[in-house]
Length: 220
Image 1 (tube, rainbow, N blue to C red):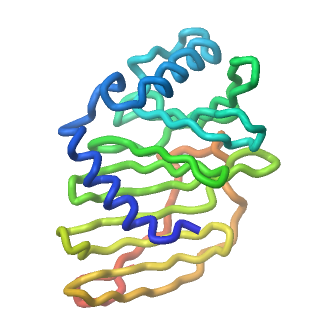
Image 2 (image 1 turned 180 degrees about the vertical axis):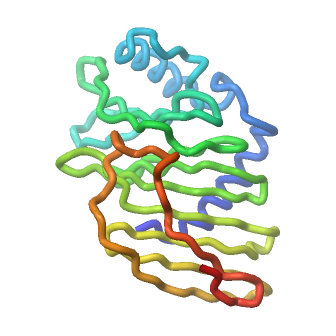
């Protein structure tokens, strides 16, 4: 799960620098077709309680494996976002599948991707970049958080540190890259129920702490 996701987030951050100097407007940052679908879906699902100006990021993909594209949407500001899933149908109508409470904020922008019936929601905090990626996977009882990736890159040589959390195996892999040397350290975390997207609230969410410093020492 999440193979080399920190490096993918780094490349995604560099790519987005060409189109984002700060938080860009939704009209200029999205594929027109997908964005317009999101506008229609939000009007349909929320009865205009949310507007197109609140769409911070959107991506299309089949999350419920029915052959019809669904939408993952970040709604709100950089400081107060929510992550919503809108399931599509062959009739062109949408329904709300799940919606977080307060999602995690971003200093610069968000990146959304859909792959293998999972949503990867990245919050970019610095132009290094520094980012967090949350993986919500489709299960029979809805979308649940199964993975978290933190990446803090310090230069173009990809020196930096971060961690990968697997909530299915209850394991954290901490890493540090410096001067072409890499160290990884694995730790177990307490087993707990997977968090449904509907119940995810960044203000109460606690991620595993710790990092590996420049001297390759672990700091809890």
